[in-house]
Length: 393
Image 1 (spheres, rainbow, N blue to C red):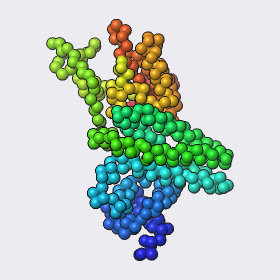
Image 2 (cartoon, one colour; image 1 turned 180 degrees about the vertical axis):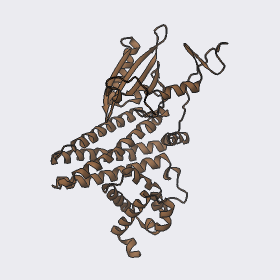
Image 3 (cartoon, helix red, strand yellow; image 1 turned 30 degrees about the horizontal axis):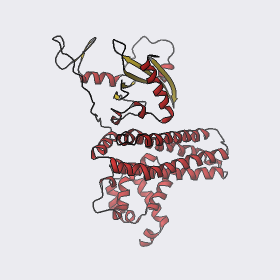
Image 4 (cartoon, rainbow, N blue to C red; image 1 turned 135 degrees about the horizontal axis):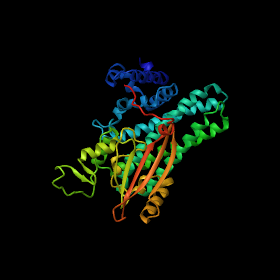
């Protein structure tokens, strides 16, 4: 057994087997009981090599993320008897760091296929295409960073730095998309594939370094327990209601039942208003006259990521530097009365997204804010003929 444990190649193969058993439904506890001697002697290099190979062999990246608890078991001896909260699975920072490890493994896995393709093994192209899809883990990681970490750091005075990093994130997204598109033809040019992936790899690895050396230390310095809890709730899909700086106290007349908010054409309770807005087949975001985000709807299928951390945030800080000038122009035109509507439409995979901005003005024409309405209209654009009857159940 000692020979097995001390053989790096066999340790790696054993860790691969453990990963696959985890994927098949075995619990962490069962695996620790049965293979604890292997886990205890596995190194970071063993795990990295095993992860790289199972990803290359087709195991979904999301499944590899389930290794968080096993990582802790492996490195437990190097931690304090009672690890700090951020070193435990479930803490947002632990999960964030684990995602970076997974991103690095994904890049290494794709690199192997790129090398084989550029060496003339064109039969590996389909595997390369499938593995390139795993780069979605990078995009998801950046979405989490921009919508959960940036708003909190912004409150502590880091708005400028966050905008710079957001701009780089978007550059990386574009490079990933270019690389994946490049792989679509039947026989992509070898040199183009090699150069495109080299650029993706360089930028992604550089960003990991920036996050580990700059972003994470800043979160450790400035995030409070409440900040971490808010982020954990967002990741878990829980609704976090941020406080607003104003209240609305409508006058209740005898004709309006107590508890309802009188409107121009009726009266509704807060629950009814919330249900109405979240049931509409559109995404809604409201920005007040001070350019601060005050509300966004939480429908079943949001088009753009929104988190409670943006409530009270300046709308200009909710957009990457590549597009913030467009938002600023719209708001300025609305305030100046130069326009009342602005609209755009973009393709996002299979979706065709229609985005509209509407200026809100009171009865005196005073600007009161802007509402953004986004909708996937791909299905609407595909409609033909007429439909006058209800479908049969």
